[in-house]
Length: 256
Ligand SMILES: NC(=O)c1ccc[n+]([C@@H]2O[C@H](COP(=O)([O-])OP(=O)(O)OC[C@H]3O[C@@H](n4cnc5c(N)ncnc54)[C@H](O)[C@@H]3O)[C@@H](O)[C@H]2O)c1
Image 1 (cartoon, rainbow, N blue to C red):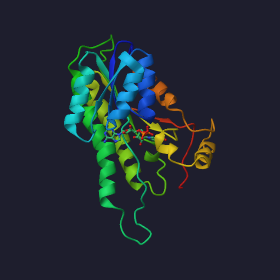
Image 2 (cartoon, rainbow, N blue to C red):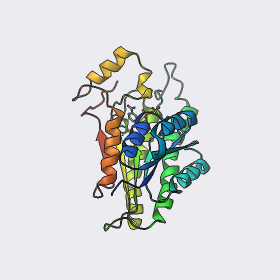
Image 3 (tube, protein in one colour):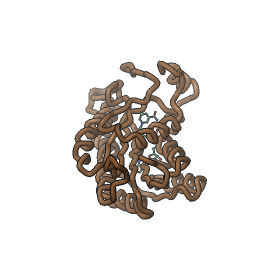
Image 4 (spheres, rainbow, N blue to C red):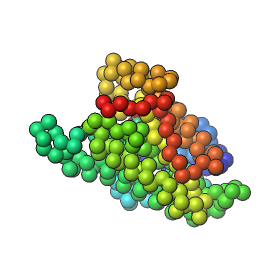
């Protein structure tokens, strides 16, 4: 796919991996719609990037907000890329220290955000992309890139809800790619390891350094721009499809 002149919608685009994606794609000539619950953060980034970016506030768990974001991204025509980065984690074991069960509302909240949020944007973006002309001789119409986590495979102690949600994002990848193959839309998932985003910035410096040292190579937390680079490569390389790609410096997470 030729990126220059296309449009993209990026959920969670105001921060971290989503912002890294927005920066990379705008530099490559992609018009980015930043869709984030943090409207102020989305506005600030869009203003910094100028003409190449616009923003819309909203919640990925709300289907109407997702439709509005996709509609806005499609306004200029040529909506070819949807990247799902909105999401978060949760720490909680199957049973608490006093043997009471994992909080159900927390479990449901994480599934709603990480799975349903991804589903909402994927389905609406696919609908908009499917109605467009093909863009190249392969018959391509677009690409959808979702974000899982290495926790989908190496879930640690306390990651029950988070790993369940990211496992579902992994599980949706192949059937979604198969469903959308008839309309020339590819679906891929990136499973990041440990990235230096506001999520991890909450940890003290020594803990962040120790986490970086636990990466196989290079021994540091990932820069969000590496995530953006992979998004751009996936979008450009039309032969990538239906796959989950770990982006993790070779890390395999221990039990804790
Ligand atoms: N940072 C890491 O090390 C890491 C590792 C593996 C996976 N991930 C995954 O990558 C994704 C992005 O993580 P990040 O580190 O960039 O986090 P982040 O907190 O920096 O950014 C997440 C963004 O999503 C937005 N958001 C949250 N809930 C939303 C909602 N309901 N609707 C719309 N926007 C919403 C937030 O406002 C924020 O701007 C998440 O799904 C996370 O699970 C991150």
